[in-house]
Image (tube, rainbow, N blue to C red):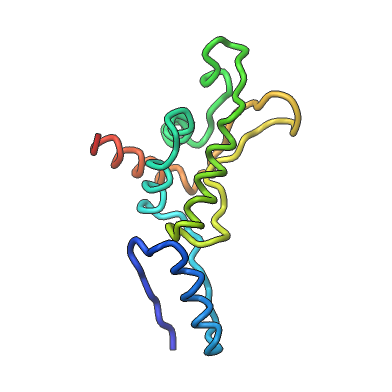
Length: 140
């Protein structure tokens, strides 16, 4: 038997308690770590404005945002952008907005040291995040 449970806006900690309960009874639990428009919308709305810019540009530009588009003075730092993206993903897990194991929807690109050269969103997420940013912009 397969049972699918959907819980809208769960309270913080609900997911951990629920999966523990199921595990107690020998149930095999598979968490859905797929980005949906609803999850992407929540993620986008929770980001600070500069990080929202990165996600919005990636959704518009087939997943790629070059660093030059984000550096106002041409040589400025992008420090802090990646942190906000990561912290929002982690906060979503803590608050039960999505399960642990969600892959970041956008990743910094570069040599691993020095300046970030840009950000890349997987192509399969572009339409999802495009719909999420459109949905958010229409509300504002």
